[in-house]
Amino acid sequence: MELFKAIEARHSYRGAYTEEAVPRSDLERIVAAGLAAPSGCNAQTTRFVIVDDPEILAAIGNLHTMPAMQQAKAMICVITDREPEPVYQDMSFQVEDCSAATQNMLLAITALGYGSVWIDGWLRAENRAETIGDMLGVPSDKILRIILPVGVPAAEGPRRDKLPFVKRAWFNAFGA
Amino acid sequence: MELFKAIEARHSYRGAYTEEAVPRSDLERIVAAGLAAPSGCNAQTTRFVIVDDPEILAAIGNLHTMPAMQQAKAMICVITDREPEPVYQDMSFQVEDCSAATQNMLLAITALGYGSVWIDGWLRAENRAETIGDMLGVPSDKILRIILPVGVPAAEGPRRDKLPFVKRAWFNAFGA
Image (cartoon, rainbow over all chains, first blue to last red; front, top):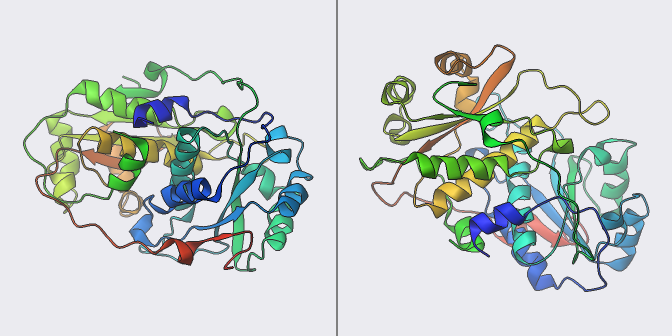
């Protein structure tokens, strides 16, 4: 799929999935897109666990009320360090790193005909990052930050409105 | 450009630019790609100032030692709230939001034949975000988080090595 088309087509899909499986070759292409994202000082801090084991998918899906999480044929679990080491002066960029990787993967998911949604804050509540991290053997010094469910959308999902360009972007001066 | 090709071709370019101008139509397409990125709870928190005024470009470029910053024909300045309001429970996602937008823009920059690099930590040091923010009229409750210089690369830039898939990604269990 052409890049600008993929950027335009990508949207958060929370609905049901069909029964169609997601082959590992596609999951590997999606995660390879994540690996290709930039990272602060090229530290490549983000790690990925790709879940396609039906038992683990069910165990994670049971924790959520969203059809996309309950019916996902695969999930991509995005992992960072719990206490990131500085890589530039006293700074680390692991949130930026994993977000750039996630955005690449969402575009790849779109281009391959799947739907997904960026699951993030939900993991930070009620110890869910730890509960699911334990299912995946995530070490105690790492933390599960993001999950992307993957499957073939069973229906066209709703798309949320976006603010127009002129409300968010200007030339040469803020709000010009 | 095809999506996976753009993801593969994107790399951090820090070198010199040619004298070729970057038309506003291209800058608008690049920033539209940023606007199309997801944001936590669709809060669309990221703002953008596109700099193509030669005087402002020179004033910013003079602060940096990198050819891409000194010779940029345009810069895209990515702005968030200084103290983000929660949008989900007590959480905000503005770093994630602006990072996803930035990644979309880096891919768009690549697809249109330009080169760029994600300038981030440098802005947080020595009050540079404030100094440059003042040049752009960024309000005091907002902060300049990221700059992307834009121009046509004058040469092939070096590409840093990336760790292989097996060192960063696994199926169903961390480190499996």
